[in-house]
Amino acid sequence: MYNELNVPEIYGDPILTRKRLGNALSPHRPMKEHVLVESNYALLTEIPTEFDRVQVFDHRGNRLYESQENLLNENTFYVDYVNGVVYFSSERNKQTLRFEYMGEGVYLIPDSRVYLTTDTRITARTKFKDIDRLIVEQKNRVETLIRENPQPSEVVDGRVDRNGKVYPVLKERIDAEQLEIEEARVDAFDKEYPSLKTRIDALQSQSGKTIDDIEDDMVEIWAEIELIPGKIRLEVGELREQHGTIIERLEASIELIPGQITAAVSHIQETLEGEIDELKSSLKLLPGEIELKVNHNDIISSINLSPENIQINSKKINLVGAVEVLSDITGELGTISTGTLDTVIINGKNKQIYFGNNDPDNFEGRIDYIEPFMRLQSDRQTYYAIRPSAMTGNIYQHAAIHNMFINGSSMFSFGYDPDEGFNHRVVSSGNVRLKFLNSSRIAIQARNLRDDSYAEMHASDFITGSMRHTKSNIRPYESNVLNTFKKDLPVRTYTRKSTEPTPLDERYHLGFIYDEVPNILRRGEGIDNLSVSAYLAKAIQELMDEVNVLRDEVKSLKAN
Image (cartoon, rainbow, N blue to C red; front, top):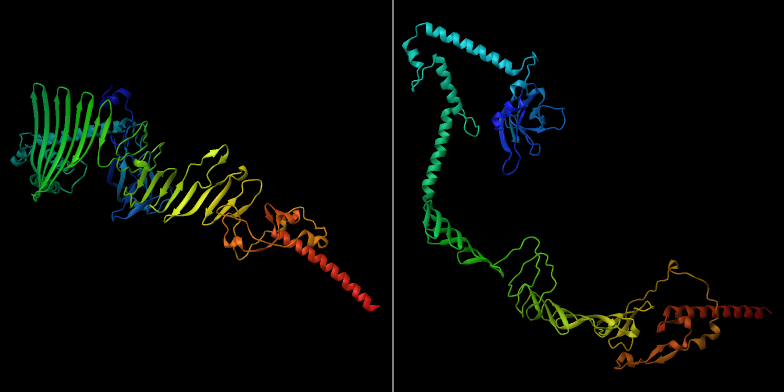
């Protein structure tokens, strides 16, 4: 590998790039500088990063605004982020502006590649050599004149500095002294002070504060190395008193003995009131075992690793990220706080899982299992119970599989009715059950809880959908109804059958019997009331036709 200083010799005066990567090892450098605008542009010391953008302020502190176009006015500017050039309108010429940006490095151009605009055949290197020769020539002439002419003793003494160095002429010594003073006005961070005294005052002020802080805070620092056969111990420590109110002791140590390495750090803090706060961390390595321990006063967290197991003891364990468990987790786990928990089996103690707290009489939520129900409870009297849905073939054997209880009373039950092998869906509450048929018939039945009779339904009205667009095969009903009306639609009184009759079942009802009405009026196990109404309307229409015929006959008889 070639040394960086030899690059020009190796590659023939190349253009050098010194660029920062913008990461932790090579961060971009914050730059603040004042630059004079000439010929409508200002040349920055470093190439600015385009991400952080360049900020420009005038001598009054007013901020100028960056433009993405070359059409500029007095308050805007345009940045060439490739070459580190900032362009302005002509109003800003001869003005010194303040620039703030993040520098990513520079391009260094050798003097052999810089040409003169007045003569492109001459490079800056050639011109500089000519200027250097002229300066040396003029300097020699002046020194010769001074040496050949008698000088006052004060001038001769002034050419000799305090270290005995003799300058050819007094001006050269004055220039050297002035150069040293100007260089001393610039600190290591390229900050230039107005005068050398200003910089010295700033250093003195900062040094005084630092010394005061050290005197106030630092009490003692030590380092020890102990070497004895079979043991090596290294220790560093610091004893600090902060403004007479807090005493701190910081220690770090490493101890090596055959078969064991122990590393430890500690921080002990004591106030003048006698309150002690202690933090300790340690790592112990043994053959086949690692012990990690952290404690704050009496609170201890530890991790022990061995070939057989890993033991974690802590008041609180936070697992961040994806956690995959490939085997069983057993024991008293305490409280587990988690976001998404993907699991296969959770065996709660006594088949109970609590939420919020585990007080059996005053819990916030609980899941338990009491044969044959699994219950989701908000309290002991309010819960949702689920029982296994036992089946024989494709038929469910339990009518109530899901049950909802409020204040200890069953409010709703959800299940199946295996009637005729159709597994009808059933919702039960109180003394009524709604049966949603699952056969070829599309219907909802309101039954009593024993399912041996129908239940009443009360409402202000029952509306049957009858829009034309919902029907097809519409045609007049041509059958004569009036002639068979009495025979086909006998009116009966009856009582309802029930294994446990209620007053509703025992009272007499007026109506029709399913088996005695025409088929067109039957629907499932009952009679279609809308069809009955239409049937009666048809009979009335036929009766009105007969009345009209009789009316015409009466008129004819009266006329004769």
